[in-house]
Amino acid sequence: MSDNLLFIKKFFRHGTKIASIAPSSPWLSRATVRNVDWSKAKVVVELGAGTGPITKVIAEKVRPETRVIILERDPDFSQLLKERYSQIPNFDVIEGDVRDLATMLRERGIDQVDYVISGLPVPSFPKDFQREYFDVVRNVLAPDGEYSQITELALVYQGLYKKYFERVKFIFEPRNFPPAGAYHCKGMKQPG
Ligand SMILES: C[S@@+](CC[C@H](N)C(=O)[O-])C[C@H]1O[C@@H](n2cnc3c(N)ncnc32)[C@H](O)[C@@H]1O
Image 1 (tube, rainbow, N blue to C red):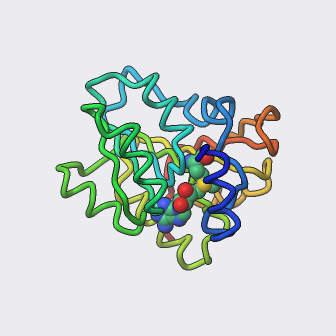
Image 2 (cartoon, rainbow, N blue to C red):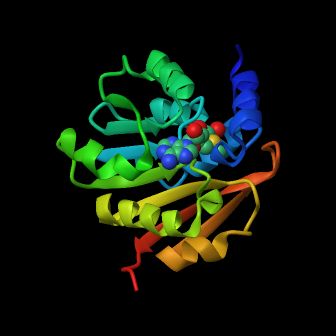
């Protein structure tokens, strides 16, 4: 089955848990990781990788010394990601929920990561889970680390990311279907 077909089937079955009708385009995938300094990154984590369009760009750009952790909750998506990426020595594809990210990283000897790249449907999370989610990110992201987030509604959720980060930059990508973009965020704020 093609990635597009699998994705649309999942969307009709799970709705806001998938939150998109098509995988990110190559343009959106590249825009999402444009902030990454590949020469310095020691650990990169991708959350909600789906069928792996952003994973593909990461695989093209990353150095073999950088550890890459790919997390996906859906069993069919994670199986597909394992088939495509788990043979790359510095890649680790995990089927699991982002709530358990810190534990899963600790089990692999990782305390801090340099880049979190999220394809998760964060605005669709219930409010208390949103807070819990950003606590998870704060817990693992290095103080000078960066957070990237895909979005399908240009600029609409800028306020949400500004609540959690000092600096938020939005990149619009009109070639995606539907037109979309990415937030690049730095300087995670302390809670309260
Ligand atoms: C909008 S899709 C993005 C897929 C892919 N990154 C892309 O750009 O095409 C969101 C993905 O997040 C996954 N997801 C949703 N909630 C999750 C959670 N709590 N933990 C891990 N993955 C989750 C979904 O299964 C889905 O694959």
